[in-house]
Length: 323
Image 1 (cartoon, rainbow, N blue to C red):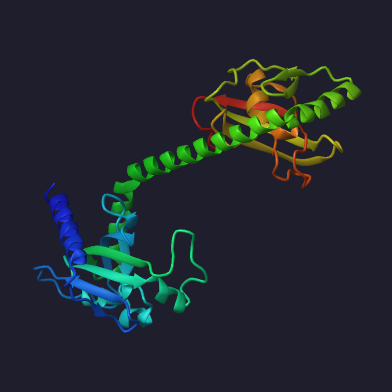
Image 2: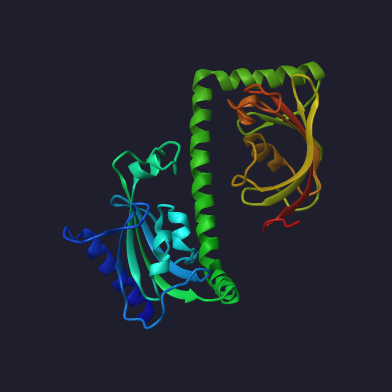
């Protein structure tokens, strides 16, 4: 708790320093602005080859881009003469010791002029400033000490990192589903979905295949329903499949794939059609283009391709399927 308080205090000091109009910044050889807030540490200055362990906050003007406090710390190898004066915060690490804090300011215009960026990303504009505030919490004099600390911090941070990855994945999944639902609604309203369902129905009629419709228009032929767990929303499934283009009946891919029903990465036709099977089930899915790759080019390199999948449900599980 005490260490956390001191970290917050340091952040406050740095934030206050950067907001003062009368603060005097120095310049590195490359022209980067910097200010060092020295600590009372009796440690010696970091030497070339040492490793600096730090926490940092990086802002674009007043907007926070990255904040490592409470997460995995950063490690920087201290270079000779600032790493050939590369116009970035590592230039000043050979001036710092354990406990020191610093603020660096990189001008976006200078970054462009020095060739650090070929073009500005959408969130940047000319005249912007990249401000990095950081604190050196340790300096390791040997590679072995540095590597041991990285291993310790990685293990400590693993639960948080895993949770963050899961939250990011869930957010991305939600955004993709919302976008997909919007496109499907547009296809239904315009009549495109019905047009593509008719392509599949005409194929089934011509081939005299008695398949049943499920969901928004996936047609399923069940050869063997299976006798294991039922495929339902949230279940993890492992599926052996052979994919064909309905237009040509030619195979474009055969493989084994695992995913989570209604939550994992698979085309909508799979999420719909597989729910008619249990573990061990075998059959064929006939999928209209809008429930396959939609407006994106499919396996045949054209949009809205109707697809056929001969499938076998190898496994149904409540937990992710490991290989």
